[in-house]
Length: 562
Image (tube, rainbow, N blue to C red; front, side, top):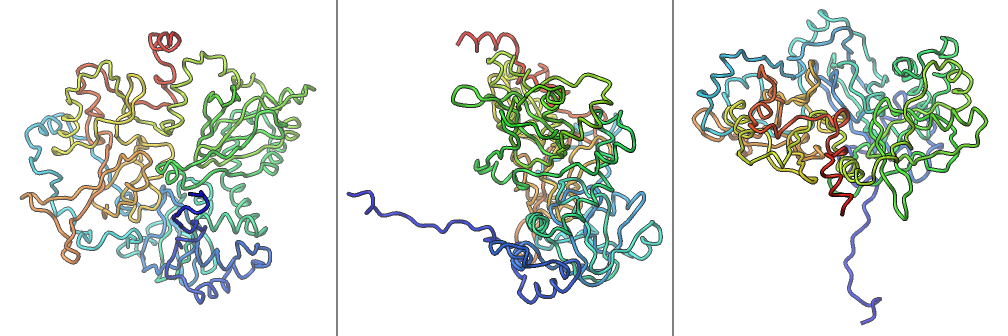
């Protein structure tokens, strides 16, 4: 049969706006938004026919009705959208902000030694048992709704007790955190019933590309509020005079690469790595990583060799620009690609030559190309960590399978600490004799926190670990679906008598998100580590300690021999 005549299956190619952000967003809603600042000042003709302003608002935005006292954004949360007050009024909480309990966050209390020992005899045989009285202020019977928000009681009194500032109709907030993938700087609460426009980051990116005034406003806000402080904390600029430093701040450029929702493509194995800088190109500026991760590689035969990776605070291209300033015709020695989403600051080479290099008092750090000197036998470990994004971990559970005897003491210890319910699974991806178990890694880039409607999943104030407040979790599953490593589990809860807790309206089980919390209540830290009788288990920050990329000499010898 001729190949041209074979039966084939057809599927329409997925489109940019196939899944609108607000399914109920109508043309009338868009018209009302376009008549409201700052959109009424935007020139729609500057937007291309393929990405018109009307369609950005229709498909990348939605209108929310916020009740009086409703929390719109929380300080410390990660978000991927910005907000505009269309009607009504909101207030931003300044100063010390609201107490953690009002934000839906837990405040772990360390058990004393007696309480910790008592767990051995008081743990329940009923899985996921909950005392329902603890949910007195939580609507357990409602459907888990990712759009649900927390409403504060007596907001007027809270506003009197805290320093606040008004956000009037037409004002935007949250755009810096949305575009820069940084935690929210403050909590914003609706002062009265308000109509709020929420725009997801994809729409913000497009508006920033085609509306000069909007882009300049965002960049100006960032330069005023964050950029100066960020550069001041970078050792490279410590010796620059105040006047020269002002020019460095003015000339710094903002760039982003990759997908903000990188975890989606990663879980589907469909992600790619956009090139940020290419080996052999002219070095026109220093690249300072502001957020995310980037792979450093060099050509090797017909493929590429991974040398290392860069994360927030690292920079690329310094040595090449320094040699270039000394008269050498130098090109970039390595290639830099985005691992997921990368936020980059580019400082032009002439600015470095004029203000930074003359003030340098110490030799630059190791050249990136120097990583190529390590034995090829050690490349596999680095490649494996980067490929599976374990570089994101600050507390990965690493098990040495040569030491582990599969006794499961670690699992039992975890269960004993959590009322009989283990919070991790003793399996995961393996490399040689190492295994990264399915336990929360408390990531540098916690995408699980993006989109939590009640703030139940958050970073702790002390230690920065990612924890879930069981009291305010509504079981929507947003965090579990977002976790790139499948380390969050939704469980059906039971009452103290072992009866399933059901929603009286939908007759579905009430679900809660669970994961490793590093035994936040235990005086001795993670019980799994302390319980292992063979020292096979450890919690690892791969950015600080990398046992996989620097395997024992015995493995290196075997690899070299093979």
